[in-house]
Length: 553
Ligand code: NA7
Image 1 (cartoon, rainbow, N blue to C red):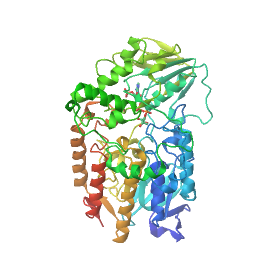
Image 2: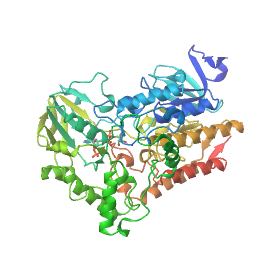
Image 3: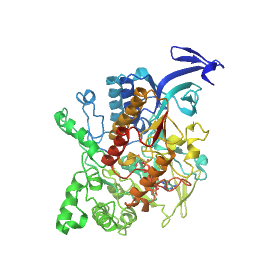
Image 4: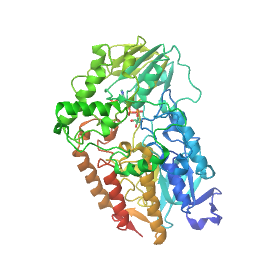
């Protein structure tokens, strides 16, 4: 539908087929941290913008993930926006807030930033097509609405597309089969029931901890051990918080100087610079912090050299095995022989997880290739290579088509007619983890080839969101209609992504950081591994130099 076919009235056009076309400067897709920040700053800058979201409220992953025990494992106040208007009169109940408290926080953000009037929920964006003649994206929703916008801003996050393995027989199961991110709003009654949790990522661990208290019999199916670290939860006695409010400004300012967007950094010494006694003391101190510090504020060589990594693993293994009574169960949870490089698969934080296996109503099944893999789902439950287990509930905590899945599930077509999905069929290609060559005026946050899953979410939302706003402002000031990443820049950037990854141990491990959790997905580093400060410097220099690597017209 070209612009000449339409009658334009106050930003609303009527297409030839009678459908309304909403004209905007920008459409923001997704109402998690990335999307709400984007809406706020772009609207404040005077653009006409709307936010659309698949769910029926704000929160992104926190809207969807309502399973028992769902909570963030980044501590606050790291895990919140830096705007004083939000934090000056906000208090948290816990250091690691649960999903419901995070939804309340999002409601607070929506009120303070007055977001609701420009947000439309229950709206799934199904396609976007670029029209070169008008330099506009035509965006369609599943419900049949049409938007025509100069900028398409995708904030779909890293976990918008659930993954359930293609097991035979799921439909035949007579009990209830659930994916945790589609947890029913009306809480299912699991009390005294036979419950299976498949998967031991962050979700499986949180669920298992919680359900061990409720289920009659809980069986956890583990394919790979999760090298979880202890979470030191704190219940705040209000109004006391993690930090005095005047210290917040420093903490937020420091987030972009931290490798992972928190307020801490790696120790500038290598593991074996210290004596065994000093090292033990350092490990103990990091361990006792009860957050990600044993992972992301340890010796700088831990993620880069095998020996340093093994040393960290040995400490973790010793501490973890001490929590489990049965040595055979400990061999599955924390094998003495290191199964993969420590910290190169998503580390989770746990709160009594390993101890659940000391309870009589909890059991663990090793479904790795060395154990008894799942063969199918049956009417009664789960069939492995040596047994059929019977259940009332099966919870498939099997994760997501992470990082690229949420973007690829929208049918996005650039001027050449090539879709984003086709463009990425052999692997993700972006420039700066913000744009894709051949897809002009389309930007995204918390996606591939940016610090993303190794960066605290709100930090990334702000630093990428600000960059996108500046790019839009630049185009406005220069009266430009189109900004497109150059193919050569994209190719060079991909080389950089591999170079950074190859300097680390990450590519040696199967994980969703490498795309390997989804059968057939290309094996490649999906995350920028240079750390937040270097990423921040790179994207800001590109902007300061007039958006090098982009074609502006
Ligand atoms: P994850 O981290 O992707 O975990 C999924 C889990 O499911 C993991 O233990 C997988 O084992 C397991 N899995 C996946 N496919 C299978 C099959 N086919 N058979 C058996 N087991 C399987 O997702 P989460 O939801 O836990 O966490 C997502 C992120 O949310 C998390 O990292 C935080 O950032 C918050 P595997 O390790 O692949 O062997």
